[in-house]
Length: 399
Image (cartoon, rainbow, N blue to C red; front, top):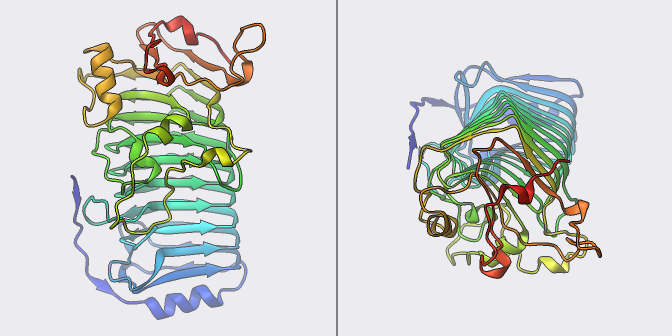
């Protein structure tokens, strides 16, 4: 596993910075000085409006939570409006490096989030973690070392994730149960999976209208180091895109290169539930999502992908053999030999997939319009892969 070992010389500004955050009036700018600063407790900004927290640059202002004794997050922002976090680095929180919740208007700009040392399961779940928020922007950030997702936006609306670099995470970027999302201009490499677009059961809202374009997704072949039982634990090493049980997704104009197992996978929650890993008895408690086998109890949740459209992407893969440490890799080598597909749908059909006249229901369309040399497969996972097909005409449609 890769390592990140920057040289640090720590000083303390914990008392003064904590007081600034607590006492800040609306429309304040909190300037972080240049230097390396260690903290024993979470920093908290709560109930504030129009606040900017600004460092001197991610290579000059470093906030470290390596000696953390209380709190899960490094920096927690809650119940705020119009917050800007920019130009600093944050490292080694016990849980998430930055968590933002119940906030209307949050911008992460030029932030570096990392865990130092060898990349490992004990690292925090999320680097940058806005959840239950509106008007979210994450731009020009660098994130590494998260044991779940580097940039993770959950249960939010009106989201822009652009021009970031993510590497050495289980998932580079993850949009979960979010509406109106743009994922643009990012580079995701050397993660287990590059970009994940998920809808999970039992949450406050469901996702739709996600566009991912002009991203460079390459060499995401890192061993999956998520704690057992986490939903991202099922992501095969060597995954470019993975779309799970959400709707109105458009993936286009991306470069998807040398992800050894699959360039883009489209799957239902039924398949994920069947692949569930039992959590270890020694698993450290985190806020990361697990696999819910009782997902059918959420009567408003639809476990099948709907209206997913891939077109005009550039796929290439110089690896002849997929990652064989997971079931997908073994299936692909067994069924396809040295010519695995670049795009695969698990083929598990919703009860309403076919209309009374036998035609596919437009509500459940999966469409792929790529170059002729892009191999597409429908796996028929519900029937032990008996109807597996790589006929490109099966998904030749548009939305």
